[in-house]
Image (cartoon, rainbow, N blue to C red; front, side, top):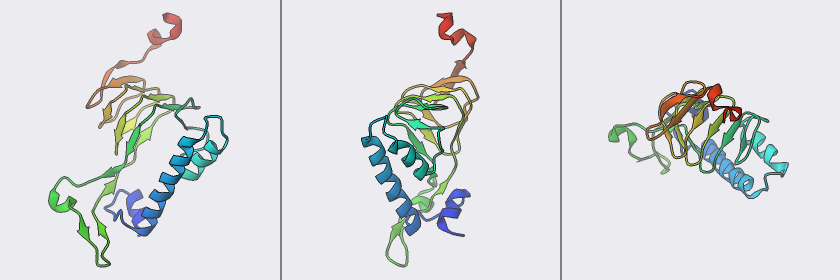
Amino acid sequence: MTEKEKMISGKIYDPSDKELVALRTKAHRLSKEYNELLETDERRAEIIKELGIGEGSIYFQGPGDNAFFGPNVSLLTPIHPLRWQDRNQYVKQDGTPTDKEYAKPITIGNNCWIAGNVTICGGVTIGDGCVIGAGSVVTRDIPPNSLAVGVPCHVVREITEADSLEMR
């Protein structure tokens, strides 16, 4: 099993693996390129596809078909061990420093608004129609149609028809 396959399956993997380093480097380069483009530039859609994020479902820093992401949203899938004996960096036989980590997926439903400076931790599912307030740290699942805020993020209330702009 490759280190990438281990990572995807949630097993402990070596983040210093050459393939994973290359993928991270590519993602950083493409993210930088994406952020420097105007929102109307068609290259943005190509970059999203190249990153493997999904075609037409997400549009960062602006309106999208199913999800809105404010600036500085962090999606953190890597999980580091709690015990220092398992977490500390070590040197592989080839001299490369590395550590042990594993990954948990993040699932964000359709029609969500993830406000600025939100951090979403690995293993979390955010249901359809949710709004996550600015600066929140999401460490647990959020049920559909919820307004959730805070550190740690918690559900304040359900989003209902009473929240419609027509009701104001």
